[in-house]
Length: 172
Image (cartoon, rainbow, N blue to C red):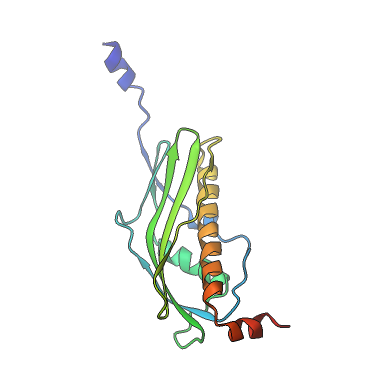
């Protein structure tokens, strides 16, 4: 009987949509060193809009590609189809929150194609300590994971910049 009584106190899961407005890119740590344009952002997450579990929150992230596209444009990628520079296609492979014991891990995995260069993967490390398990903390951690992914992607693009374009862009 005591075993069954404990089951009655289980907190039900709460379906929780991620608030995209709370994940806006707040600062630009790395500047794009040469022209680049965004060909496409494709959502290839195997679980669709599911973004993991966070305490009692069953997370849902609708239209994640729109948010990712906005972050990349804020970082300097053009969206015009005829734009010059590196042609970048980003495939969103994973975007979810993982929480174990006292550790929060926002997981962002991007598969990136740039012109004829080999495809590469961006997966930043943004693990932190879980203090309160609140929705505010959840959004702050996801925002940090997305910002780190954005930073790492811009740094990778900068390494692919042709040297003459890089000098022309950074001079003056």
